[in-house]
Image (tube, rainbow, N blue to C red; front, side, top):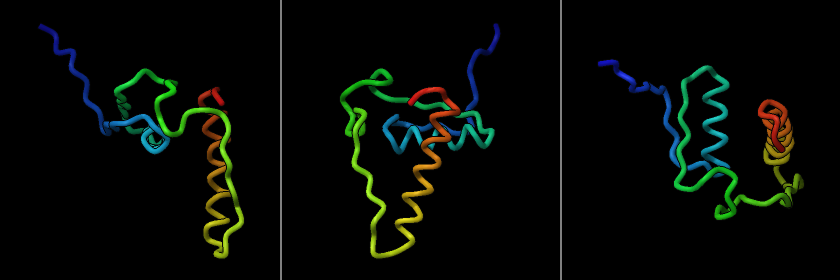
Length: 85
């Protein structure tokens, strides 16, 4: 009998913005990654669904402003990598 079980380096539970980001980054680092969620992908039940968001880059501390700019760059790269915006 053939063993059909799969071995994963990382299993991420929850495919919201944090879980999806984590799974994407671990997969990009070459780790065999499994992303699980209780709902179908691209559902409307999560807090991060939809297409419009307000993102501000004005903070008293430069650290936060720089993080926002870097995050925006990383989101654009992820969109290009997966072919979905």
